[in-house]
Length: 326
Length: 136
Image (cartoon, rainbow over the protein chains, first blue to last red):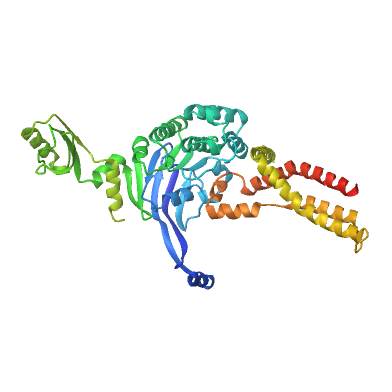
């Protein structure tokens, strides 16, 4: 059996954080004695990723996603547990390992701020020792896929957030990493730019067979890119499986959209009325009753159109986060 | 070793581009480097001239030589690596340097060497001019 590209076994990271009250006396007191608490950021999670897989890594703020990505990219040592990425122990930071991975953080800037991105690209070429012909080919490909042409010669500080993110991603992928960690790559971007970045990630994965672990608060990213998702909350694993399975497991209801003449009718006897606009009712009904309610709606009302669907993924994720950790 | 030489050469090109991006900042920095030893030099030259051409066993020319060398030594030995590291550790940006397959110190050494290589010729010209003025 082929070994996984990423293997995580009972990984834990506990941060020691000092606490302090407000005020001068408390500040003085902290010189002598610090009150420290232990915060379990990642609390014994396990999962595997096969080579070439794109997996969404979801969780609310403070769930432990970034800490996990930092451990898997070798920036942080875990408190306990095991992990291998491409067969390497990440925190040993072997050069051959670092040459095969990359970490892109949407909220952090890696490019040299004052000068055109092309300088940062050249610097990365030297750092990763990319042969000139490979560099030229990869730069051309990335320029085409991300439409970087007009951006390469402008100082990074003069680029818009979206343009900068495209350059960040290009800089991080010039050495053609086999494992890509993406921490909210579309944060703060407009819808068009988000879509473009998504298409690019999918295309990069297809062309180079890269393994991608992606965190994002935009469910559109996850739905478009990831068949499988891993959900963590309070540092613990809540769910690992198909996105469709998550919806089945965590939702006990379906959404019925029914178009009738206007919003005057009272549909409360059919299910919970979520909203109505221009005669389009949105009803929430228990899963087991969906067929019966649909039949009744069609029989009782002058239905123009009717649609049965799963609740939006945002709603499902919210439900998952609301659950207690196992 | 060849890889490191290439890295240092590339860092030199990057640092040059960064320094030349803000011309006014470069000029202000140069003035800052020259002004302090120059003020000392002027003060001690006046004191020396008013005391018959020397203070203790130091002549006016020796004061000039001392402060010119001080200016050059300051220029060559001044480093900002510790402030940069402190900032990177506090802000969490050192993480990115740790993701690269070279030790982060190489970028800083090459950056420091590069900026000194770029600015030293200008400092030498300033030193020659000051020396000429003092002798004249």
